[in-house]
Amino acid sequence: MSAIEQDPVCLVRGSINIDEFFDVPQIVRPGQTISATSTSKRLGGKGANQAKAAASAGAVVLMDGAVGRGTEGKEVIDELCGPLRGVPDVGVDTQSGGEGRILENRIRVWQEGSTGKAMIQRAQDGENSIIILAGANFSEPSTPYTPLVPANTTHLLLANEIPFQSTLDYLSAAASAPSKVTSIYNPSPMPSADQLRAFPWHQVDWLIVNEGELGDIAGSVFDSSSVEPDIRTAVDSLTKASAHDKVDEKAAIKVAQSLHSLVPRLAESQSGRTINIICTLGAKGVLYVRSSTTSAPITKRLASAKLLRPIKDTTGAGDCFTGYLAAGLMRLQQEGKSADDEEAFEGVVKRCLTACSICVENEGAQDSYGTIAQVEARLAANPIEAI
Image 1 (cartoon, helix red, strand yellow):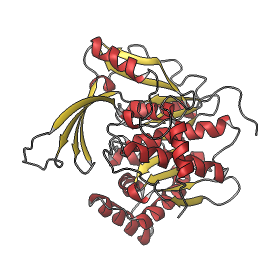
Image 2: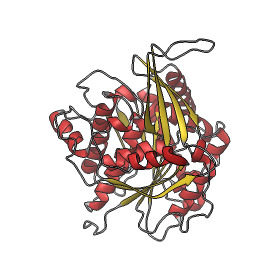
Image 3: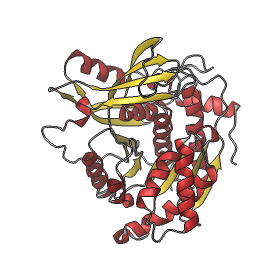
């Protein structure tokens, strides 16, 4: 396959927030009042975070979202679509890297209210707790876009801080587009059990989840009357481990493999269509189950990237991984490759893990996303091995 002439374009349909951080000794418990040691504001939202991460990785991104009226909304657009800064003090010039950028053509200004907000408690150990105010993110354009997915789109990236019906509409539009659009879905926040059971999984090419989300999805879509007992046990184990901030990687592998094989049966009219699953495992790295045109499905685990400094903040790390994954898939397409090239795809995931290591060593979400040059330099000096 030869490299394509036109640059891939990723449409990110998602949220744009202003993150308000409260630094606290520990995450507040029910009924407890604590004092914050400091506060700050930064640009956030899962859609904006993932768009910024993908652009930092060299991708061309079309952001499809909304901000509130007035000066605040304008400042958000200017910052989101402005020059990529990278992360200082990681040994590589912050201005060096690819030609990634975020296009603002589809960022609407909602005249009836404010930009979305997120209140984030950030504990001393780096953990966080988040409360979301939807604001403009749940507004709809006065005139629907036609087509919903632009003709030059090659990749679609979706998360769930927008109306759920919008997620479904964009997935459907991508699936019926004249040219192939690779759909990447990060179901966070998690839909309801009923929504998960009715979800068009056959329209998703790549499902990006953490271990808790994987357990929630499997627990909802698996038919308890027909699922094998060991799979049900694995789902229960995964859910319990996540509830106690632990990771059961063996259960995660079993559940991911079962969910991968289940998708074709969930969509009988789309026989042969499969879903690729990537499950992040925190400090234990990542596992993926992906389809192959030449062999049985590929299952692999990779260790997490080496940390060079203590963890400061985990906010936006999952979005960093997802954005870098989207950009990596786009890069494969640009180079005339595909995820079927295991060595090339493994390289994509390793860059995602390395980007996350830089992210958690720094404060904030988008401010902690390294450029592709910074990520590749660190990965070259600190290789990641398969497990």
